[in-house]
Length: 114
Image (tube, rainbow, N blue to C red; front, top):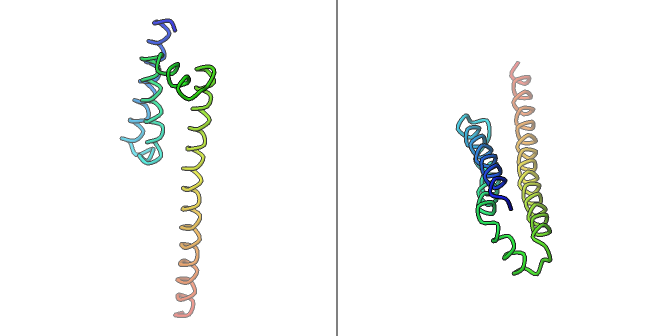
């Protein structure tokens, strides 16, 4: 890979990581959801700085091409993000149901007191 392209990619990744960290600092994004993005950002930055790592990792896992390895890692990352978001939605759904039931009980008690 061209060194100029590596530098451009590294700058873009660092800007993206800075943006994510700024969102966490402003409390626009929770750390537990941003952690996966931060890990991936650092991982991609390492692979950008040392591109031969991708070739060695692909060969070690028996994957024909480093590009295929990159697609595989992207697919795995997408699955992890989907799983994290599914767990979060499930928790929120349970909390909303419990809050709705508590609110209904409080309203029922208030009507009984009137």
